[in-house]
Image (cartoon, rainbow, N blue to C red; front, side, top):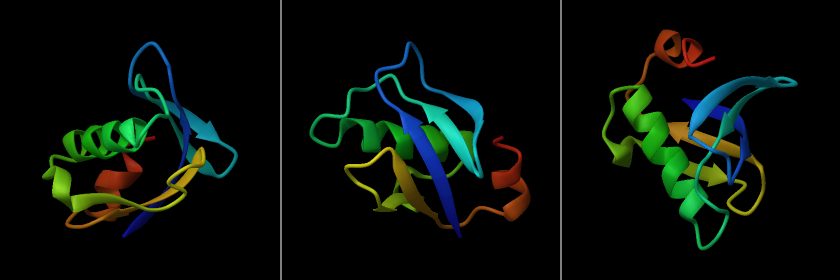
Length: 83
């Protein structure tokens, strides 16, 4: 399954911050440097969905705030509970 997210790097803490239009907004404590924010995003989503980190990957938007994330092994209900 894929999930569209809008990220806000350099936040105080990593958390779901509601919606940004049609997509889920996630604040990330990491800076957008050398993939650090993408790594934190994948780690955060994996922990929130109780999945291994390898089950969550950024497939589009590696250098953008708007990202498309592929999630393997999560139910649609679990993803819907994120936000």
